Image (cartoon, rainbow, N blue to C red; front, side, top):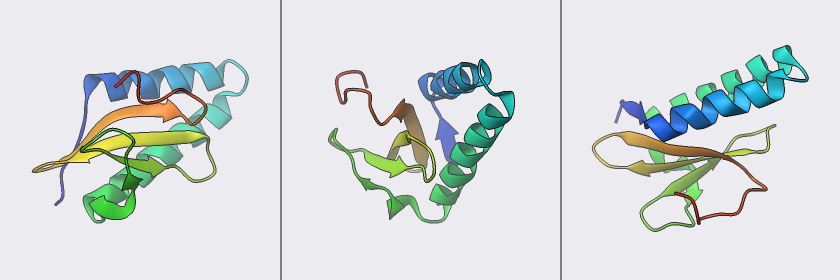
Length: 94
């Protein structure tokens, strides 16, 4: 498996996260977004690395050194569904 596809919703989540963090620290925002994207890219090689998701047919990648969780599913490719803060209620908004 080598293809990762971000849904529009997941891309918006990532943008919102960056904008929110950048209000206080633009450099921290860049680091956080970079860390999320880098760890997601590893799913191309190890798609099963995330834990079983709270929603059926999904998996969750806990992004190290951040409070974020990437929700994804594995089909013919890895589909990134959401990027959420660990404190957000889940799964009421997939």
